[in-house]
Length: 434
Image 1 (cartoon, rainbow, N blue to C red):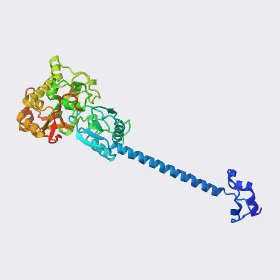
Image 2 (image 1 turned 180 degrees about the vertical axis):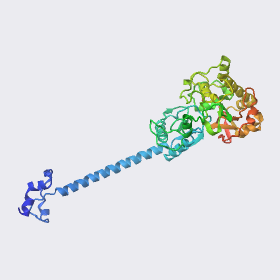
Image 3 (image 1 turned 120 degrees about the vertical axis):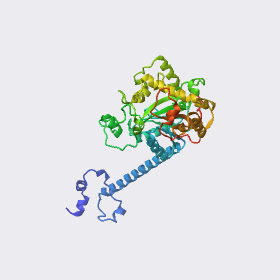
Image 4 (image 1 turned 135 degrees about the vertical axis):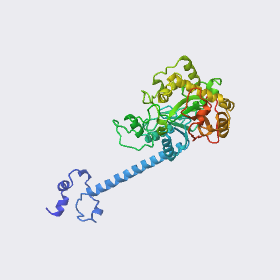
């Protein structure tokens, strides 16, 4: 077969090219064919056609790819613009400070305005909470996703509230990525069957009893709340459902708890009885066995000791079980006595006169010193939230006993500080103000 015959033979050409693209065969126009070899012959130009088809597909992919990238960039710009409209207030506890700082950095990178502040009182809640003003659902969901990423999938359900000003979100950080484990703990291999456990919790669970053995306290923390301000942050609490200006909590500090403290354990000294872990719902703890007189007295100074909140149960099973000097009744009677001593010293009168006003932090500390001794200034921690005094923590010595003068207990206690109130704070009135 001559060379021209091979080119003219379509069957042979189809065999060489796979026999699948016969419909793409065509004759060159004569004017063009004269310029090529075998000008008078029929050419099979499928390779060239395939190259042209590939170039067209590549061009189409490029347009699609860069079109998608442009769309995504536009979406990211719009999200960043929306984020910039929202102020996020992050509230942390001692175990979640590192998490709050990490979340703040993440949110600021996403164009949110974020502020970080210590929560007034160590919350007994065990879940993270995100509240948002009307219209902030999408922004809150983006905050929730960032939080979930930092906490290894721990979910926080955004909640809409009319009590926050427009453009505000509030994040309450009560939990890191696993109960009892600090956010700053190093990451280690973990599975569902064998999750990561911090050294401190591992010691407890292995029987070393580092932080859950009763009778090892080296001091006490006496925690009081200014409930009107607390209820601004936690309006859903059962004890926050009143706005009566004549109730006890409207004009007095209320009892949060008396906590045996072991310095080497930080805030993790607790659960020294049969119950070793916190309950998500405080009412899941067994009932407290108190006589009617003690029960009525505790209900007055601790409004959270009601059905639905059951704060007194948590205080006993987490903290009360770590002391060995008093029975359950004696422990509650001691807390009641300390609360009355503090309020009757003149501090309740001072606060009630200042309701609705801005108070100088220095004036408050001077009042504390005048009423409870000069040592009190260095042994009290003031905790503010959104510019309001929400609570205080007083260090007390271990020579606690029913009827012992509060001044003496303060004088012999270790020094503390780290108040976060700034130069002034507001004394909130009962009932929702914002």
